[in-house]
Image (cartoon, rainbow, N blue to C red):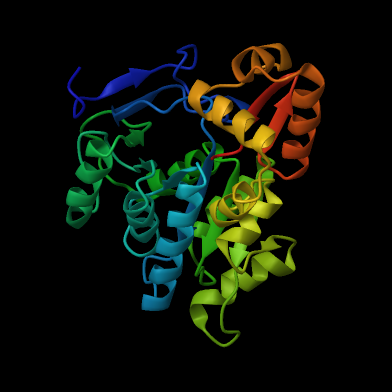
Length: 291
């Protein structure tokens, strides 16, 4: 199928994002261009002002790149400023990014971001909208769009939100939807951070870096992964290699079979790998944390 053609996704479709089904008013339909999101992939939104400072844009790109490198698909609204920087950061890291439009799926708005939107599609990302082709970009549509940005994500990161910012709307939706809200702080006298600091006072998590966000979400940053993998004994290294080559979760019996180690050795090594934060366990299945 043409990657630039729009696909219709209904709530009963297996590709309909499961996180969206959890929100109070999920879209009755979605239109998507590009590679359809994998329902099981981890997602995080990055939002902020359109009138971002150069420092805010740099921070957004850096945080997006590190979160993408850790395995998160980056969600944003393809607007000027922080949104566009978040998408670019994910692309620079070779990660996936998803843009949510506030207008018809046939047109990328603003027009100046059309090149970026097409790059998102070509890179294996997705452009999503609840609006059919031809729907204009009305102000109310963007407010409604914000609930989808947060609804698609397990957490929302706010970077540079003035007192009257659409990103505050996204943060509000996130709180109502039970999502984590992280806020990057800034100078106390800068107008671009007045809304951001109000969110922190209201209970949002302060995040000074991408590492803060990853730790709070239970994910070890890639740099720490490397340090941990440099300190593996031979048995642990063999198990990590087996899990990486398998590309999916494995139970103990399958790990014993693949590594040819004794069951007790595998059990002990896997337990240590879990403690190191390199392996996660669920229902007796072990898999790597974003290695």
